Length: 433
Image 1 (cartoon, rainbow, N blue to C red):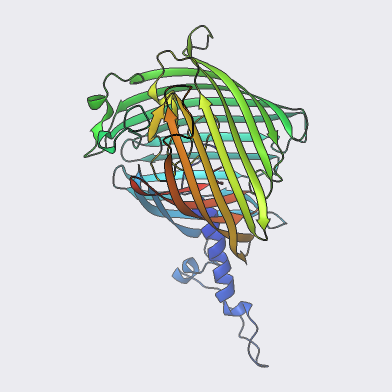
Image 2 (tube, helix red, strand yellow):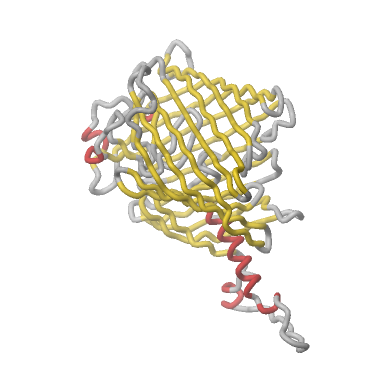
């Protein structure tokens, strides 16, 4: 689910871990030494009831988010994790109260529904004292491609005060850092024609209205003061029509252990929905491969290449970009030693390799949680000329990740990367690619 907030993975993963630890440490769950019968368990009351994970009305999960752009966010997520008769998570309800030094106190509400492996949905919304607010709805049906058609719909409103812009090019200096406020309204629909379980023809239609407004962060210049000539300031509207051919043999969409996914796509973007009002054309490819190489050990690789053959007054935010912890097909690509959107230009190349090694599993009271340690390497560049060799002038990032997996639907990660500008940390829900 592309727009789900970062740090939410702590909700399910720490919740199950906390429940498991409580069960293991509860003396009523262990056999008593010798023939003496254990005393009858007593039900906590008052404050003790709230402090006992077995009897508390919800699970108080600490919220700790670290990001190169947004800084450190702290708070509390009271969490309800619902499971079915097979002890698989089918719903997460997780409001929160948080504090960020840039935007003040905030509250969020979240509901994630895992109806089945074939159908999922989410509703997320939040507001902070200053600048930031968001609403995000997403619904997916036909994920397993067992029927002829698959559908994915999302509606997003997001006002964020953290985006950065350093200029256009692969070598933009950090000293040119600027900040802006991005207000985005987006409606997207995807319809997939499932030719077989592996082959799909996918059509994507997306309407975006993006307002680039002055930045609000202290000690960082606002974008218009340094790049007042850049295309994309103010309000821009984009209508994207994209057609993709997808080949996917992965054995699971959320927690794959083998297989490949290959995507080739082409698209046209316009300002008002008419193809003769062209903003840009795009072609590209996105591929990921998963190989089991030893017991509990998987090698995962990802590569993405995007070209914009035709351009006409394109907003900077619609260009190809690398940076951050997420991979979006036809969009931003990961470079986990830099903040999101660190490098922009016409075309982009990105590749990642990581070794996913399971080091621990434990049975929680509601499900089973696997813990992975994942060393990784990211490389990438942006470039202005289609004749540029994609493997020249690459930015490199080395790092290690930690993942918690509550099968079959929840993967949470913490990735720490080191690049030429220092250390960056990211958290998120689902694998980065």
